[in-house]
Each structure stands twice: as C-alpha cells, then as structure tokens.
Length: 154
Image 1 (tube, one colour):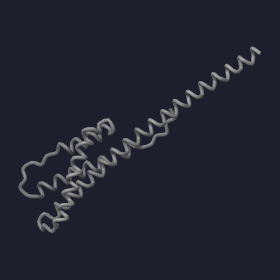
Image 2 (cartoon, helix red, strand yellow; image 1 turned 120 degrees about the vertical axis):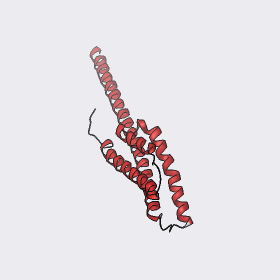
Image 3 (cartoon, helix red, strand yellow; image 1 turned 90 degrees about the vertical axis):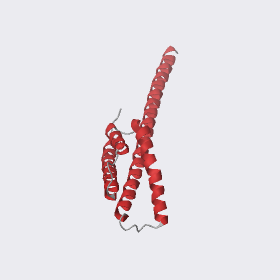
Image 4 (tube, helix red, strand yellow; image 1 turned 90 degrees about the horizontal axis):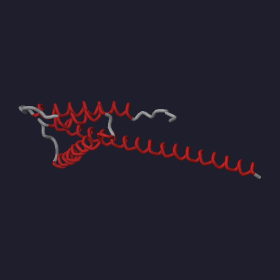
C-alpha cells in the first residue's frame, strides 16, 4: 500500500513538473511571437510612411517647373505628407524600444534633417527626397536583419 502511494506521489510530481515546464515554454513562445509581431508592425508602418514621403517629394520635384498637378492631386499629396511625417515622428519618438539602435538612429536623423538656405526648389525637394530615400533604404536593410527569425530552442 505504501509503495502504491509512493508511486502516485512520484507520478504526480513528474506531472506537475512537466506541466510547469510546458506552461513556461508556451508563455515564453507567446511573448516572443507577440514581441516580434509588434516589431514587424512598427517597421512596416515606418517603411510605408517613408515610401509615401519619398513619393511626395519625387512628385513635387518632378512637377515643380511645369506645375501640372490638378487641385485634386495636390490635395491627395497633402494628405499623404500630412499623415506620413507625423507618423514617422511618432515612430521615432515611441518606437525606440521596438527598433534596433541603428534603425532608431536612422529615423531620428531623418526627423532632425533640415535643408539649408533655399534658392531653387530642387534645393528643397531634392535633399529631402534624398534623405527620405536614404532612411527608407537603411530601414529596409535593417528590418531584414532585425526581424530575421532565429531558430533558438531556449
């Protein structure tokens, strides 16, 4: 009788330890996946906003001399820039814990970029387009590195 109770205690303790370990692993996996999803979303939002900004500056730079934009196109472009720049600023401010240090530095450099003395429209839209393109390329490269799924058991 005593050996049966002892065996039940052994089986119960093994079950409890296995359950705790499985619970720990499942919780750890869930947190890791959730963290990765948050990072993907942050990178995706930043890349989309930077792409919109590059598009905005490219259109304005290419049509500055001819002014071939209709009022509807101008309004559409103003909506794009009106949403994209604040989104980048917010991501640079709040995303520092989601982005890598290099990505955060690239975003901050783009936000802090200022054009010097403006003589020609190309002196305004050109440098801004170049800076936005540079930040976009850097962020795409860093996202591939930072979001790479690693096969780590523990």
